[in-house]
Amino acid sequence: MSRYKRRRRLNPNFILLCIALALAAANVVVFLGRGGKGLPGEGVELPSYVEADYLIKNEYSRPGTPLEEVNAVVIHYVGNPGTSARANRSYFNGLALSHETYASSHFIVGLEGEVIACVPLTEIAYASNDRNGDTVSVEVCHPDETGEYASETYERVVELTAWLCGTFDLEAEEDVIRHYDVTGKICPKYYVEHPEAWEQLKADVAQRCAAQKN
Image 1 (cartoon, rainbow, N blue to C red):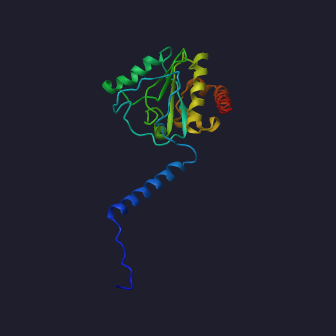
Image 2 (tube, rainbow, N blue to C red; image 1 turned 30 degrees about the horizontal axis):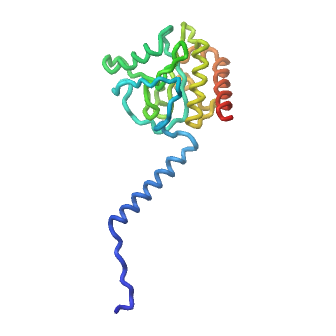
Image 3 (cartoon, rainbow, N blue to C red; image 1 turned 135 degrees about the vertical axis):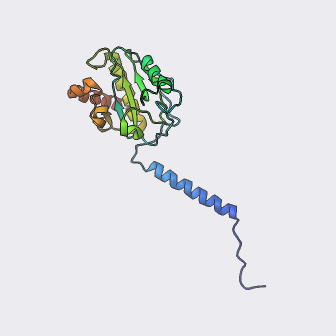
């Protein structure tokens, strides 16, 4: 009998399994290492006041591109006074046929505080230009040309935005922004022309976030 022990050959399938597990573990580390932000919205349960009525998948308003991280919430205004959340959702959905432009939003907040989810939180929306890939967008209806939100709408915007901040571990003062802050577009109009009103909105979101944690 040889004085040397015979080495056991490892099963190739076992080696492949070890490699796969190592790669999976590495992916988990990278995924969790995004500074506490950027977790995709898969499995997130929407608040009870949100109606999920997703657009049909199409290249003009819901391309189905994965939203891999969320670093901010972008607030908009629809720019069409007096129109409802339902009407604006229909417009986004109709772009699949009209090919008029590229536009959509994750949420639309209506004149009476109703909320429609148009694009899942796992996908990008066409709302915020070069920030589409790392933001959630909220379009907001308004009663007149000033662009100021009605009181019911305002309260819902605060509530929804605070929920999004809590869901994606965002800070209201830093991570809630206007379309204007991305491109310079006067949107949301009233809250660009009245920066003190914008600061108050963010303060109200921050207060709601603090209340949610207690």
